[in-house]
Length: 313
Length: 313
Image (cartoon, rainbow over the protein chains, first blue to last red):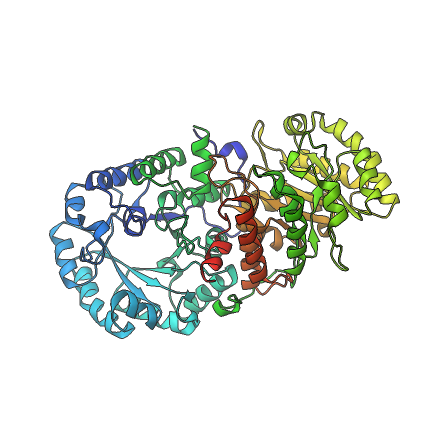
C-alpha cells in the first residue's frame, strides 16, 4: 500500500520542505484512553512507530500512577523500549523526583507540562501558574545541566473550558517564562480543540514579536471541533516546523459527547505528503500500527485517513 | 448556547467578509444514508435549516426512485416544503423529464451532476462524459430559458477511485463545458475526499487562468481523509465564496471503513465564525437540528463541533 502519490502532489507557497512530527500516541494518547494497555503492547507500539519512520516518539510519563494509572508501568516500558539511533523518546516528567528516575533510566529527552490559564493549572496540577513554574524551574535547570532536551508543554493556549478565550499576552508571558527556564522547545496546546486559523496565526505572530524563535515552537492541536489540520496548515505557513500528532487519533473517545481527540498522525501525514512535504513516515506502516493498536484497546480508529486506507487492505 | 465569540475571533488576511454555505444535507446527505427518512422529517429538516439561517438548502433529487430510494418522495417533499423569501431550494435534476417535473413543482434552482472522469461517469451515470453533457445540454438550456439558476456539480475533481489522480486540464475542460452549457454555478467535488490544499489551489488557479470566474465556483469537500476544512481554507484564500456542507456531517456512515462523509456544516461554521466571516447561521440552532435528525435516523453525529456543543446542552 503506497497510495499517496497516486492522487497527486502539489506544493503551496511558503511551506517547508520537511516537517518533524512529534508522535504523542504512546503517552498523551494512551493516557487518555479508558483501556489500560499492557507494557508488552506499549513496547511494541513504540517499536512499530519507529519502524514507520517516526523520529520523535513521546514514550511515557513518570507522573505518579495515582494520577495516570494507564502509564503506571512507565519504568518497565522505558527499560524495555529499544532506543534507536536518530530517534528521540521524550518522557513526561512532573517534578524533581520524576527527573531523577528519568536520568536513572537513561532518558535523554523530557517534557514538562504547564498551563496558560490559572483554572487549568489548578485543575490539572493543583497549583497556580506561578507555583507550577517554580516547581519546574529546578527540574528544567538540572535536566539541561545533564544535557537533556526539554520540551515545555503549554496547554489551553487558545481557549479554556472555565475561562473561555485566553488573552494572547497571557500566553506569550507564560511561554517566555518556560523558555527562560531553559526549555528547548515549546509545544502550544489547543487542549480543548476550539482554536481557528486566525487565532493560531495571531498567537504565533505575537510570540515571534516577543522574540520567541519560531524554530522552538511546536503546535499541538486537537480535532474536537474538526479544526486540527486547518490550524496546522496555518501554523506551517507561519514558520512552525514541528507538529504533534497521535497515531490513529489515539486519546479521547470518538463516542463521547465532548471528545477531545488528538490530531491523527495519519491525517497529518496525508496532508503533508499531498503538499510534497517530507516527514519520513511510511503511511502504510503507520496505518497497520494503528489498526493493530485499535484491536488491542478495543475501539475503532478515529483517523479518517487510517480508516479509509485500512479499508483498502 | 452561543459559545463561539467566547473563544475569540481573529481574521486572517485575504479571506472574505462573508461566505455562502450551500447546505446539502437533505439531498446529498440523506441520499447517502442507509436509513430512509419519512417525508415529514425531510420537510421539518428543511424548515429547521432555514430557521437556523441557511439561505441555500439543496432539498431533494428528482432522480428515479430506482436509483435513489431514499428520495423517492421528492415530489411530496417539494409540494410540502415552505419556500421562504431569501432562501433558495435547489433540486437535483437528472434529465429533461426531471426538469419538467421540477418546473411543474415551481422549483427555481436546479442542479445537474457531471463527472470529471470517464470511470465515474460510467459508474454513476452509465454514460461517457460526452454523452452525459449531451444529455444535460437541453436540460440546462431549457432551465435557463425558464429563468432558473443551474448549479453544475463536477465530481471526482481531484481523485478518482479507479483512475487515481485526475489531470487538471481534464477537469478544466469539463468545467468549461458545463459553464458553456449555461450553468450559473460550478460545484467542484472531492468526491472521495483525497484532495490536499496544494491540489485545491492548483485546480482553482488553472480554472481562473482558463477564464472561469472564481465567483461562479463552489467547493464541495468530503472529510474522508480529514482534509475538508484545510481545503476549504485554501479555497477561500483563492477567492471562492460558496462552500457546500452537510448538517451534522450527514451522508456516509462514520463506522464504515471507507466512510465518505461530507464536510460537516457545524465544523465549517465554527471555523468561519472564528475567522470573523459572516455566514448568517445560528450554530446553536443548527446543532439542535443535527441532534434531532441523528435521533430520527438512529446514528451518532459525525461532526466534531456538533458533538462537542451538544455535550454542553
